[in-house]
View: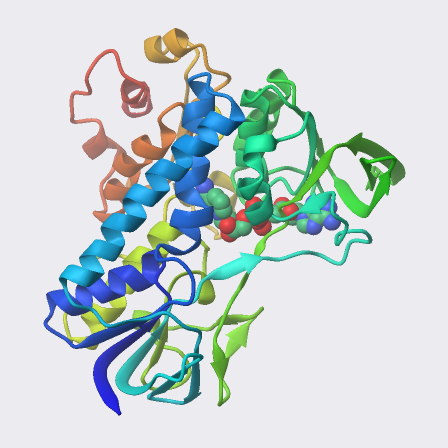
Length: 430
Ligand code: NAD
């Protein structure tokens, strides 16, 4: 039986980064993947959805936008597969199970042992127990994306999280009628309150019917139309559309294990360096506890192998920026004002509106702002929230500041180019 130093189960962003780091450190490594290399992010998530948003914004129709997204995905996947081939990484195209620590058995009959097994098996859409969720008119984000080329006229989206709002943005850019139904009192409920409110206003400005406090109870099909029944402010209401996207969260996927593993809501509980409760077994990305974001998975994949090699960590895995690609974009990192106060911290909050930022005026985008939360005594930056066209790039300044203990005064020292979105930050440090 073959023996490897590292076995990686799952070839998404987390698994691929673990493989690369193992190669970099001269370790023997095997990868098991039963679907396409690239995982959810490349094949069904981040990459195709952002490609769609970009193409639709440039005026392409849904079929052309889908084609363009497919081209980008294929190009990136071919590159990743090429890297594996070039580096002669053994790739088992099968489903892995771990009957005992240190041993992997695959559905094609391949068996091997490994000193360290890294679970990078990702997540899948989780469908809540809503009556009618199994009807043909109701689909998860995988099916919604797969059928995007023939998107019908009226779309109902259940869930006002990142997936629901990014698809709402794509659909509205494609000229479709969109309704978003979110059960919690506000969309993007885990983010800064003001961000939620402003994103809701921007969506409404674009014509999206955005309902918060609207818990969906039932989906039915009547004369080829979907009818979604929900409770809003204690009253029952209903809306009709052609297709229902259920975007109510994702659930971790773990391989079949022949032993007990500590889990929380289906995800492997991990501690320092992505170690699970079982020695020699690690978990990175969506199959582990923590936020479900590709860049978190990538950082964990690399960090996990570095720790196995006895190398010190490079990245602070506790500081994960989050971005939602609405129009304009949302990006956050660290603490928001409510979170800081709940944690009992004395903070200063500074905010700059973007309505006089020249670049924002040129792009004609909706309501936007940049907000920073800093420690009241030291001025150290603790968090930031941005609603702006390039928020997903701009957030990096704050992530660097937090990771390095910079203060508002430190951030104010630099000259920012004009005219840019990022010059809006100057106001925060005056
Ligand atoms: P989510 O948990 O962020 O949002 C799902 C929403 O659905 C919640 O707000 C929940 O209250 C609502 N909901 C649940 N049941 C409902 C019901 N019966 N009626 C109405 N609303 C209901 O999950 P998501 O948006 O599906 O995303 C899944 C994961 O993928 C998240 O962790 C997300 O951060 C990640 N993701 C991130 C990005 C990004 O950062 N750009 C993009 C896509 C996915």
